[in-house]
Length: 98
Image (cartoon, rainbow, N blue to C red):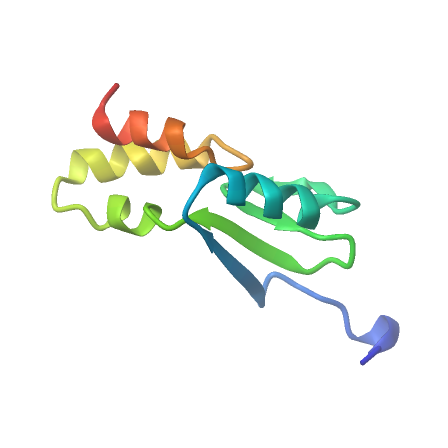
C-alpha cells in the first residue's frame, strides 16, 4: 500500500531480526542497510532505503542484559551503545570483563 507523502515511516514502529551468529547479523545488516540512512545506524538499529527501522541483534543480548550480575550487564550495555552494527565477540568480551 502506498500512503504517499502524507504517511511516512517513523521510529514508532520497527522490525526486529534476532540472530544466532555473527554471520547472520552481517547478512541482514548488509542487506537491510543497503541504500538506507547511515546516520540512523546505532546500537543495532538501522533504517532501510524505504525509511523503515530495523533492529538486528544477537539472541544472546537479552540474556546479557538480564544477568543478575549488574556489572556484566552494564559492561554489555556500554559496549552496545558504542556500536553501529552489533559484534557478538565484542559484546562477549565486554560482558566477561576482557
